[in-house]
Every structure is written in structure tokens, then in C-alpha cells.
Length: 195
Image (cartoon, rainbow, N blue to C red; front, side):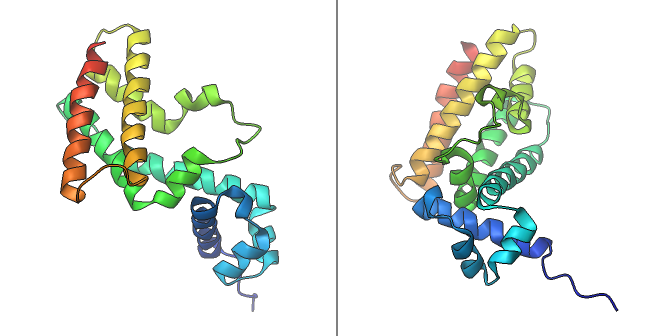
């Protein structure tokens, strides 16, 4: 009879969740293999067996966040109205960040940028490609430079609004914050598309 596998995908997911919470609450420097293992109810050897190192653990948290984020955005799909698709993408961005703030913070606010990540490569990421393609559908025939500028501007707008909300800087209850997000994204987003 084969030995049961102790270090499985469920444990890996738990380690990533725990690490995302530590980084989100206390910063990347607070992550130690021993602390993550203790908080996840496992051993340090399990962390090493599943992820290899502390650095690989933190990088895996960022990758997992982007994987989840890409799935969330891809689920929006395409409808008949490209403008409505863009609004839906913005709302999906916000929903992801509010539902998974720990991963969101690790994805975008890491204290240490991985050495092998080219910041210019962000526009080639699956998450940005979804937005870029939606902007291109909303601006048929627009020059490629204008489409790229509008997509970067919309990303910055939505990211900024979400970051303000996560920091507790948007006033009001959930309904008021949702209305503020939709209003700002609609007004400024339309201006960004027009150029």
C-alpha cells in the first residue's frame, strides 16, 4: 500500500493563503518559512518540499494571485456592447481586489520586485491583454498607440480607485463606494477612451 501524500495541493494552497496574509498585514520581510509553516499547521520541511525556498514561496503567492485574477477577468467574457464589457471588467477588477485583498496586495505592492520580471512585460500579461483587447473592441480602427494609452489609463484609473478603497479612503457604505467607483470609472474612463 502506498504512503499517503502529506504535501499535496491543498497544503500548497493553504501555504499560499497564509503567506499572502502575512505579506498583506506585515510586509514581505515578515515572511519566514518557520512562521508560515506554524500558521498553516505544518512543518518547515513541508514548505521546502512544496515550494523550495522562502523566496520561491513569496513569488508563488504573487503568481497565484495573478492566476486567480486572470481567471476572474476572463470570466467576464464578451458581449454585444464593448463599452459595457469595459465597465464589467472594471467591476470584476474591483470585486477581485475586495474579495481577495491579501493576494491583491502581494501582487501589486511587493516590497521586492522579482529579478527576472521585466516591468515592461506587464502589457504582455494575460490580465492586461484582456483589458487591451476590450479597449480595441471599443475603439475600432483606432491607432495602436491610442488603444495602448487608453488601456494603460483605464488600468491606472481602476487600480487607483481600488487602492483608495482598500486603504479605507473612499467614504460611505458599500453602496456609496460602489456608486463612487462606477461614477468615476464611467466619467474618467469615457474621457480616456476619447483621448
